[in-house]
Image 1 (tube, one colour):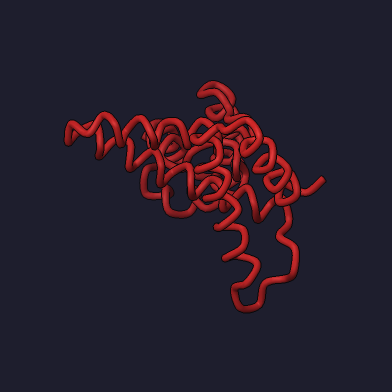
Image 2 (cartoon, helix red, strand yellow):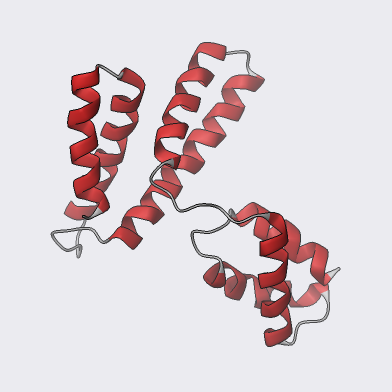
Length: 149
């Protein structure tokens, strides 16, 4: 079952359960998928890989909004973002731990022949490709800077 079909099924379940938080998040996911499907050059169905990238973007937006709301003392809005983030993260692949990321990045750095911090620009795209969907870009960047010194 495609993620797109799973979202549609989960919307019906959330409606029946009267789960407002899940329903808000699921509708946001469905809306983003519909926008991607109707974009110029897009196919009729969105692949799971495309869906995951869209969901990652939405999760990142929720995290940023959550931080901003907490900084400005808007606990009620922060709580809504947190509820939606939990639902969105159910559809994302499990994120890797820091130790796993370090091991993979060490291999990427070795394969690229990078030795100094000046090689960061050369290695970062390779690292993002190797860890696509499995780790946050900020974490990858921080660990890569640590490895390269």
